[in-house]
Length: 359
Image 1 (tube, rainbow, N blue to C red):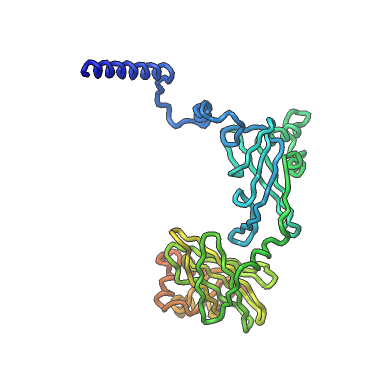
Image 2 (cartoon, rainbow, N blue to C red):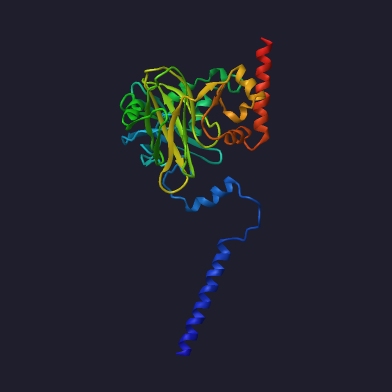
């Protein structure tokens, strides 16, 4: 038994020495050279990369593309419809007749790049997709070389270049954005009331509001669930965006707009939540807001307005917002725990007062 065991141990030792020797012969010792370059990394990856064409590690010749929409409507924060690998399968055909359905729509490496782009006509629903890469660009650029051997950029024509690219199109329902908004459940907002919004990633809630008087109105969120970052878009009855949210004070959204009595407006809200489950916040609308003019600036600077209302910059205008928090809350927010913010507002007030008096 002991003799047999010693024989096995000897064989195992011999095999390990043989493997080490083989490894020493096939893998030369490398000296530290600093961070590897893209070229070095590609060379080291080459032996283990699949031999079939792939947009991941090399740039093959693409002869055509095809697109299939899965029927899902995707919209960005400002309710712009967009297309991506989430709702469109783009399949490229290579010069050897093999194909690949793309999981991503762009990539780049050492001296090469490729991407999928598209033009979307919302009125007709036509979406035209293009495949572009650095080789196709180089081929087109060669046509721009003048008699002096240099590129004549006066000959460059973007549309002419795009005409040389592999392309395809799909047709989705016209006015897809409008259909998406109309598919949302409507919740009515009223002055003095708040409505809770619970939104998962990518989800949106639609609120309607009909003012009883003309003038500025203030839409806002409050009582955020920790980790929630809401945003909002305000539209008229024709679903034309009239205002997007600002963040006056914190992570809540703030929207100020001049509204007309009797007309219905739509507020679409969404939110990011960094945690498990959905984001949560309350949505409300108030008329306790007014545009800051000359006398309000005087009040802010000299009569303690900075602790009676909150200052909110909204584009080129500034607004005084009342009724949110105590005088101490207002003072803290106007001061913003950073004296630079307070003095920025103060200096801005003084400048506006000076301009008003100089007229």
